[in-house]
Length: 280
Image (cartoon, rainbow, N blue to C red; front, side, top):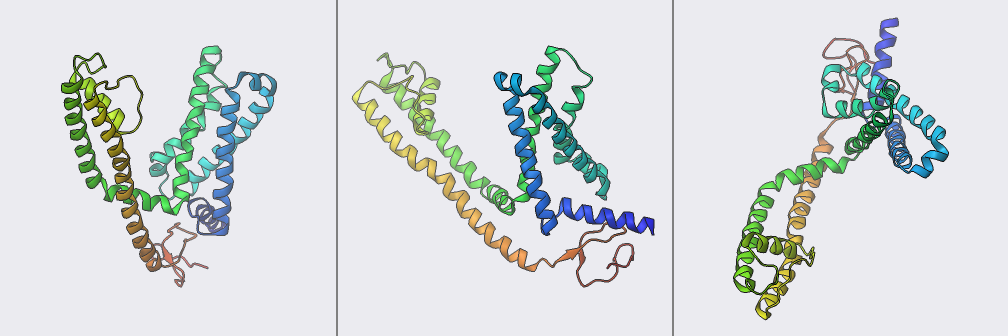
């Protein structure tokens, strides 16, 4: 009975932590989001000397509370996961660990130089924001859209690079000897990139009428070039979103086995297909 209770407890916690399709899972995601944002704000406030001097004890206490919460979450993810080693060595597992241990290290490392290094380490907590991608269904579609359009974008970027080399060379031929900054082809290519992307630092500028005319044309072309990758990704994103909706309609609702923690069991099943345990 005790073993069954332990397994059942692990199954419930697993579903709350790793699944966001239940009320409890959604609440956990929201609470985790709030704690992550609070931890980042604390690190930011602590970096302001005037605020740190006045509220150091309060900030330190809040840091410890959040660190303990992160530690509990990290332990629960390990305990309830059917493959703890896989989670620990995963990308998010490493982020969880790196964003938790700096506060504990501050207990053993003392001295001003060490504290400065620890503050930098605590900034690793910012990377916990990367975990939010798992809570946003649209992020998966966006990643798929980027992967699907990488060939088109690569071809487009290659075209832009070739165009910048050609335009830079032309501007070098036109502006060289005019003391306008076009002293070499690489420097002229740099100007073409800056102009084509509409950044416009102004450190190099054409002085001849023909050079200024070409520069004006490059600026206008730049607006169109910026919009092309956006259109490519947007089209793929819309396509991936439609496919995701079709796939989502085909995915049946599942539940978790209280014994072996298998989590892809159909709702109507009464027994686990892996271990044969009865499922309530």
